[in-house]
Length: 329
Image 1: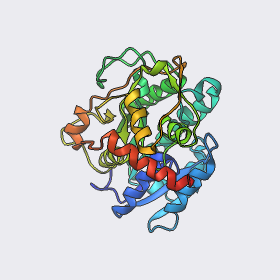
Image 2 (image 1 turned 30 degrees about the vertical axis):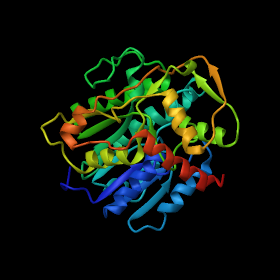
Image 3 (image 1 turned 60 degrees about the vertical axis):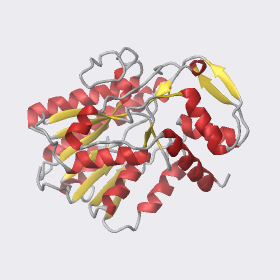
């Protein structure tokens, strides 16, 4: 890539949960951001526009409303070809949604990823590409804590299959064209401005409003919940710096908390923060879901100094305070 420290980042998914926070961190560091987002309606668009409103007008921020799968539009977007780093977070999210809407995932996650790769391939600066993969690639056969060396050949959802496909496509582009790439396997990110389809949001909403919550797999679930600020630190580090030790051009890392939390403890933390007990409806495992996730983060710590520090019992109250303020409840 060009400069040792990028001065201009192309950020896809800039109106999304993680993208919004990454954009803010980059701007705080004095790095210009060209953001793109399709503003799709998978969840209320007002939340995305509210995020964007906090970025619009900030020095160094430019936004384009476009679909990354439209390669001609992406390539023509002002600033896209001039970036000296690319952070690609745009994707159709949601494991369960992929069961009913498979073509949305093929278009956004597969065609969209290829479109970004082609942009990077033909950009004059040959920028480093950091892209979002997912812990879902591990399926339900991996041994916890999940290591990047695990075989990931048995996805249990189309969403997971598209994310693993992105890793393989990126590997081929590094081999063919010498592209510097980092894939990040995200583990259950939570925090202010988060996604309304995630359990921490829906449980908080329903407990506040006095509605019962659905507890899947009869509560026998564990997740490696990772606070948004910890995630952002890892994303920004991989975009701005080369690894501390020599690594292949294309490298894949887990980015999580390395502290899996039982669903019961998770619900208790929300109950305490809200100040009300939940009425629970026990339900079976959902199609495409997995029982547990846990990240081995040794590689990201070794190469980029990644060190998440936020406990669930500290993060959940902060989210609940933000949620009450945002929704007026």
